[in-house]
Length: 229
Image (cartoon, rainbow, N blue to C red; front, side, top):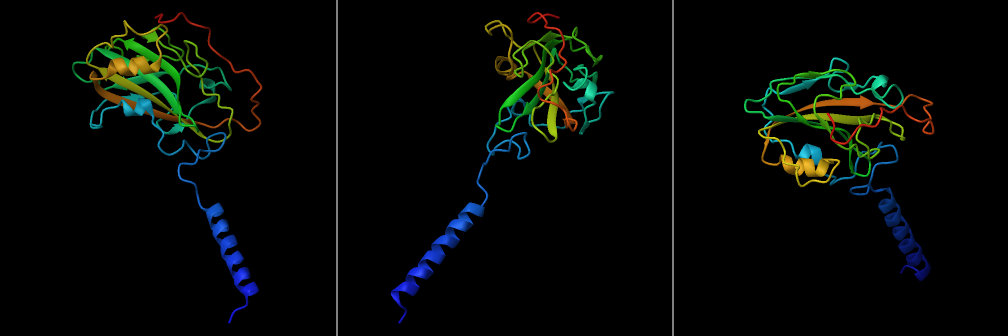
């Protein structure tokens, strides 16, 4: 017969083993580390991506002469450089398009959709915009600085980040008459519902240079008038 002391020792060993296994197991939906290495938590909703139509067969394409899809964004278009907005071009605008909307966003490690560039009421006849262009539509609020501007990527965390530029083709201009000014992304997306014919993405990546200082003030474009062309 086993002694009570031996039984107690075995029980303690089993408890310690179980606790060790629990500590080593991955946690469901754990948030990414500071700087986004782990990515956004499970269940995060990308509000811009969610607005895109399910049909991805459209010939609608968004490109840039400065950067290819899936490649590194040149430093001049970031807060570590000149903070210039990138030049863009697009083809395959669907028949019946009455307005275009451009949104540049990033899903942060907390699962929040951050808006870096918001342009709406873009003439459907427009097919390209130059670097630093501001005259091709009305500009909404960047949630990065809560200003009407192009907010260049300038993440404070280390590691590679992904930014997505999405161009929406609409069958009618979004009705924003009841929305507060300056225009932000949520009322704009709400006004776009039922009007989206197609969407085209351009995904760019950026990793801050080694030794980049978070305390260094980023280059930023001049403030614009809300909704100005």
